[in-house]
Length: 555
Ligand SMILES: O=C1O[C@H]([C@@H](O)CO)C(O)=C1O
Image 1 (cartoon, rainbow, N blue to C red):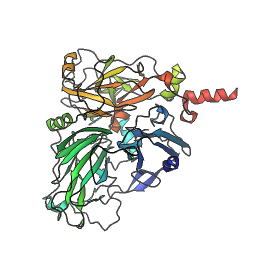
Image 2: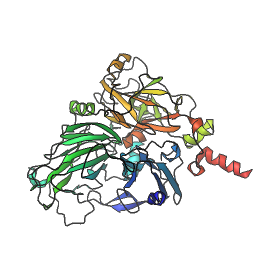
Image 3: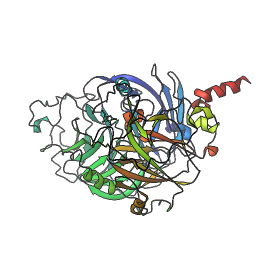
Image 4: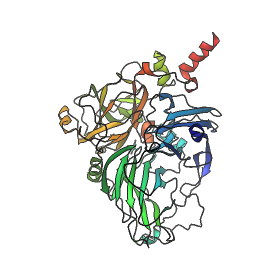
């Protein structure tokens, strides 16, 4: 039956692994890193019975891009949708995958995503339906970045005075595999210190080779679960036709290289119509931060060629890290297909969210409208449903920032405050969010931030430079804006989103850069609390809700 087909029994544990050839501790599921791929058809229900085999930490898993319509307690966000699953305990995630697309899942507690807790989640079209484009077969590319320093070390550094930044990653991983001490492309290099990889076969860090037949069409599903890096992917001599973004079909367009930010997913079609005697590079490089990490590489292996037969030219070169014109041109090409749902013409509420880097008593933080998010002990889903007013700040967080704030300069007063208030939206109303970027603490620095919304897709209405003004509304694309769940803000720019608050629940909205979220870069949205169904008590067996259930049992 469908029920049995989609019952997954997972155990999460720390284990030894060598994702890039250097042995480390990684998070695994059933002994696998990355975790097992979930594959289902649209409309089916997934059951994941998760057992926490970590000895001293809680765990949760977020199903990234799945809207959790009617199941907000299955969103897998610690302190927001549920209590963490304690060591030795079990929690069952039950949710429906309502739309076909390329998704993934990952840890959403502490920095467990950075520790390797992630995997792919692929939803096929419903039984009897067809994808709107043809392909012969498909390949999956889950992209991530990897540090040799443990996430515990990273976390302590981020929360210390003086601040210790995690730096750039040591490796980029394709399907959990990278090469730190050697390069697959060494023999093209003029640098004699670059060693070739001496692969004997069977290494955990050996590239996941993409085997293809000539003259076919392949769908590549590409998702990025990076902790920090913005990536660019290219395939030697092959153009890509972009057809899907974050689980929504887009108007197909051709590209030689694809920008992908943390939290995003794409499908591209490639035609294996090049010289069948050759193999080709697949390369992934860093954008938007000074790259100190070598490219991630694998090979598009035209069968029956031997994979030893390396491409006759070096891997594609990643565009210049700070070529933002290139990034913006790519982002602006992503548009909805004809027949996609259109955004409402008007909004009922608009909030403007200023992104700044700040200080609290000398500790480095990120803040939104001068509030740095610090999550409460009781998950909001429970405290809001049961009206437990002491669980979090009852004052509404600020909807805007002071008009005189200069987004082009470091904050004049960098001191910020911690907070955990909630933006509450009237059920079924249309909300605009303007994400406003600004200068960080150092002069002339403004960083990319990919913002991810839980529980919804939003229409991405547009990007602009400098400070957003109401006049910029004239530039909004209301005709064919793409539906996404993740949107980037470019340095010193703004990004405008619109969504309908139609999913009863409490939803995180945050920068998908793991250390930035840890440093407070997020907000909490809620709507339709009175329409939330019966929350399974095992999701709320901590904090004030846990206490409340215990009291109730006594009587
Ligand atoms: O949060 C961050 O901190 C560092 C830098 O701003 C201070 O070391 C960096 O690059 C970030 O993204």
